[in-house]
Image (cartoon, rainbow, N blue to C red; front, top):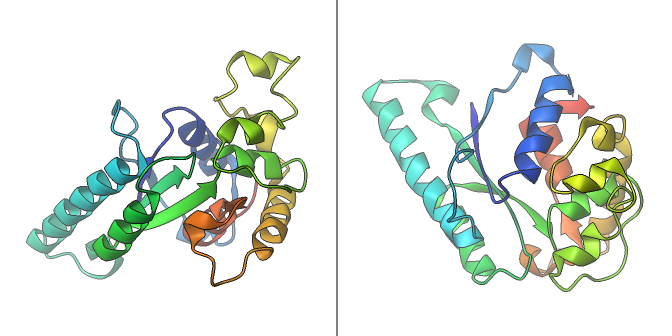
Length: 204
């Protein structure tokens, strides 16, 4: 079981719903059950708030597993946070807290829209933490029916594009040296790693 806390109330959940429903698994016998732990929660979605909630959640799930005397993977729930730079305060602190608490992070700079954009084209240039600069490049933002609710990810926006998105994200990330802290990498996303290595999805 993988539990996810998402910063966005609409974008990340709608994307995850699509890919977990239709994604092709590397190993169908190892299907991962995903649960968005804060799907119905309003507010408190800044990175530091998200990590604090996830850390509390992980501690509770770990206690439950011990009380139930669970073994193996069942005794070690995976808890993830999906959040952005987006000029939020305390992002480095959130990263540090997550590492100390055993909470995993999938991170995008400036925001999740850079991952959406990678489904269409190579991502270049600096965004300086400003999400609108990435969102404005999305081809469906203006002059289309999709623009009516731009935060909602629709199947036609991502399906059939994972390989392109993954390759574009890798090229984008390769421009940053290992010495650069993740929260300073602009632009950056490791959503492709989360999709492939955590959810076990090979394509969608």
